[in-house]
Image (cartoon, rainbow, N blue to C red; front, side, top):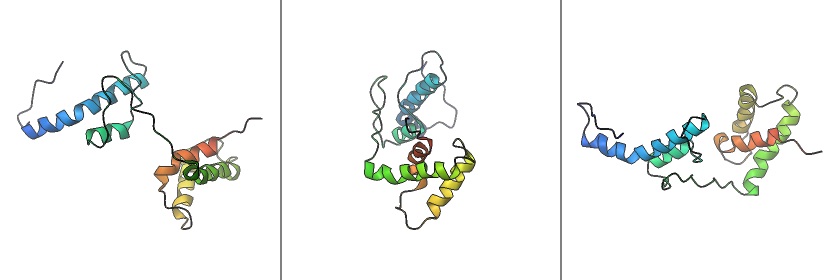
Length: 140
C-alpha cells in the first residue's frame, strides 16, 4: 500500500525528502520485525546508524532484501588498547560488577575520557571493544 494521502501542509520538499529516506526506513522496519520475531521480517544487518546514514545518502542501500555488508572491524593495533583496558577492568571491577551494567560503563567511560595520555579515540568508538575485553572468558 503506497502512501497516497498527504496532509494540507505537504509540499514537494516533503515528498522529495520522503523519497530519499523511505527505503532506509523500510529496511529498518524489516530488521525490526526480524529482531522481534514478527512474521515477514528479514535479517538485513541493519541498525539505527545504517538507517541514519542511508537516509542521509552517506551509505549505499543494498538492492532488494540483501543485507548490509558486515562491518569490518579495525586492525589489532586499534583493538589492543580498548580490549586490554576492558580485560584489566574485569580484574579490577569484576567482583563489584560481575556483568556489564550502567554503573560499570559510567566508571569506565569516566576513566577513558579523563585520561589525557591515551589515544584520542572517543568512548563511543571503543565502548564495544572495551566491553568485549571485559566479558572475555579464557577457555580452560
